[in-house]
Length: 160
Length: 111
Image (cartoon, rainbow over all chains, first blue to last red):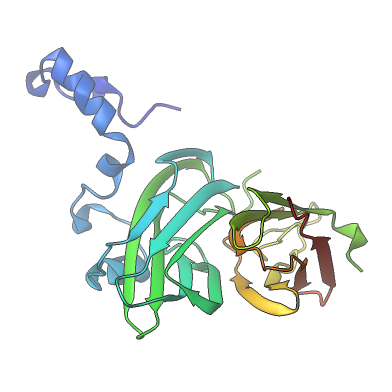
């Protein structure tokens, strides 16, 4: 399969000098395909994807370790670390996969609220998408962040 | 019971009272999403682990609600704080077919 960032797709007239192009290619990965495109350009997107972006969650204190390119969606490792804002504690952390047939992937309820929490698991992805992490704190407020990934073959549906 | 589903629980870090260690748990479960069909074209019903509860000395420390978005053979890594007297970590799970399983391990306290 052709890599989405193959330079030959860019008309010669618009090509940057080669050094800059290399730098651009390094910086590009998945963000070019998803985050950088205007909403209208993302043709088949579920309503949840758009809604999550419209909620304008504050991403502070949430860090997500997620591969920008995963070959298959069968088992994509993710590590999430949440730091609660000062004076608050984490009550629950949820991962949503808006382009999956059933978006809620996992929810962790913390019976003893904690100021900091870090966990890892492996996700099953139906298509390239943004994985959303939403943390709920002791006062009921929420923060959310996402990490995009590109996959080249789907899990969830039978194609194998 | 749970013997059809092999699982492994391990601890990373220094197991000493007051320390926070990382627990890693993996279980061999198909986590059927309900979206697949078998060779004869029949639908394979959803069968995922839909609830996991982690206790340290009978005190609930983590309550996980997995969905179909987790991979087969699900893996979880999460922090645990080691109680002063040490103790036992118990993980209880349940799947859509009503099977349940329990994994229990004593925290190997280090001097």
